Each structure stands twice: as structure tokens, then as C-alpha cells.
Length: 164
Ligand SMILES: [Zn+2]
Image (cartoon, rainbow, N blue to C red):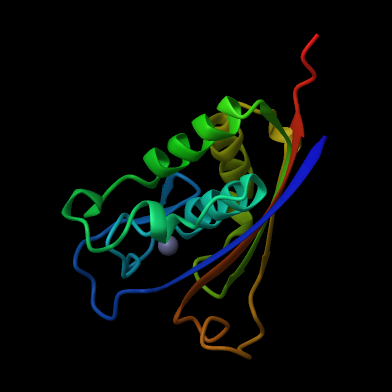
């Protein structure tokens, strides 16, 4: 039995640097400003959470970990992913593949693509070959394309473990 999951997330860059690091896909990327966000603002991991939750028929990251809760302040998004991954496994699913697609003018994603794939694969306990990371600049068409922030879409395929 298969379940498909789709998730999106977006964050805008801080207008002025508060010293917050730019976290993407669980790793720190050199950039003058971080993301405006209650948590660490890792837009890839938030979309990944939403994709897994969507496959399981669960609510989005905002319902499970609301901005209004003090405990989520500055929180490492890897913890959110660990939470939904545990649920995925509890329900007897394994992850077949993950596709990440970013709209992002800055920073350049290409040099970090391999590191993103490795980080996401490690987080999910799957092989690097099961993860794809694509990026488009957005061609200045939208606010994101003009460099105001980053928009991410993630798709996942889950397969139910056959009990013998
Ligand atoms: Zn988010």
C-alpha cells in the first residue's frame, strides 16, 4: 500500500540581520540574513514535515507546533521532522523517495545540493539516492523570485511494510 504526500512552506528573509543563521535542509548556509520565523525557519524541513503529515492524513506543522508556543521559539526544525518521522514509522510506513523543489533567488542552491541531499537522507534514515533537490531562481516573477524569501515544495512516497 502506498501513500503520497505533498507539502509546501515559505519564509521571508529578515529585513535586517538579527544574527540569526540561515538554516536549510538541516544545515547552516552562509548568508547575510536568516529567515523571519518563530523556529529556526528551516523552510525545507517545514515543507518536508508537511509532506509526511499529508501522506499520513495528519495536520500541518503549524497545527502540531504553533508559533504561539514559547517552547517552539528558535527551535531546531530537525526535532519537528523527527516527530513526524516517528509517527510515519509507528504507522508502519517506509519512505520510498523524497523530492524537494525550491524557488530561491539567493543563496545559490547548486553548490549545496549534495549537502542537502545527504542531510535530508540522514535525517530520514534513507539513502542519498532516494532524495532529489532541485532549485529554480523564480526569474524575478514573484516576491520570492525577487529575493524576498524562499518557497519550498516537497513530495514524498510512503510504502506500508508488509507484515509476514
Ligand atoms: Zn516554516
